[in-house]
Image 1 (cartoon, rainbow, N blue to C red):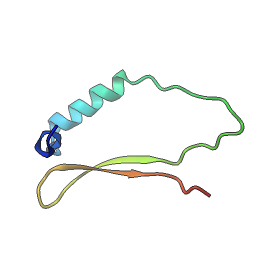
Image 2: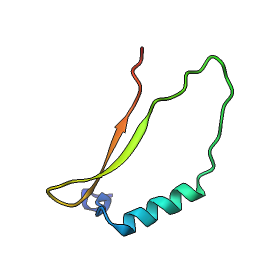
Image 3: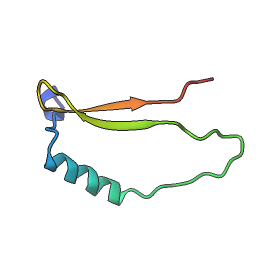
Length: 63
């Protein structure tokens, strides 16, 4: 897979692709009092200079 194969425009096709994948996703929950809830965000944004789709991934601090 080359770099150009992974480029997506921030457009309706990407929105449809994401919606289809999310609809097919079955969430799983784990009940374990020793685990902390995750504070994670995955955000799709548009690169203002190219119009390409980019994603931001955050995670909670280790402490």
